[in-house]
Image 1 (spheres, rainbow, N blue to C red):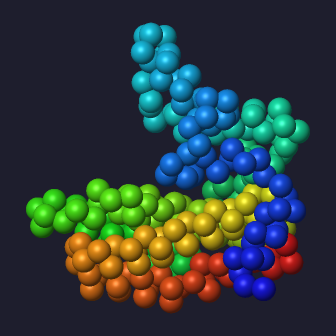
Image 2: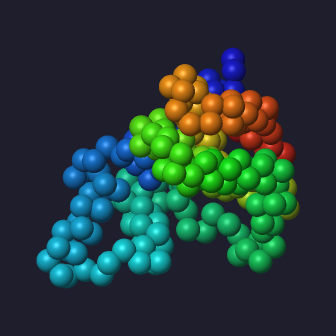
Image 3: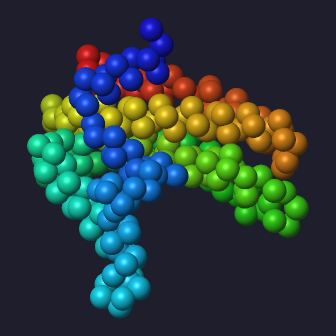
Length: 223
């Protein structure tokens, strides 16, 4: 059984709500009854009527609290988006991304792609406008953020013997999905002959070479 299949089996065991995927996918479900998409619709409606404040720096905190309330209604109050997922004693000691090799690599890898996108217009390159190009840029950031989140989970487990199993398993699933989308997007862009093909090939090779480190960082292995 490969890594992807194992992750899917673990995800089935913890049974996260389907709508939770809308918190990280580039194209969410868009259903008004979705706790995430519906929240955006309500926010936009209040803005149009002048009853709400514009999206601000505190918006992510508002959304996080909203997700926690939605999970609580489903009887999953302390799962996935648990606001206390990081122990208070650990907060001041959490290492930065540079402390974790895979995170350091992914941040640089992502930034290299962003720089390619910045120069695409002046070079008359269309790839950032394609769905695959947008996926590439979106999930490059997602993969970095979720890999760091998982590295912190493992770090807390090693140093404080604390682990939110549901969050850990679900984050593994998100990392797996983002990773596969990135490889597929790169493969398509390379075939389209749009943009610096050799640089995209290098990005593909580099990402595959870090696969084991991204999926199998130090930490719990029995989940």
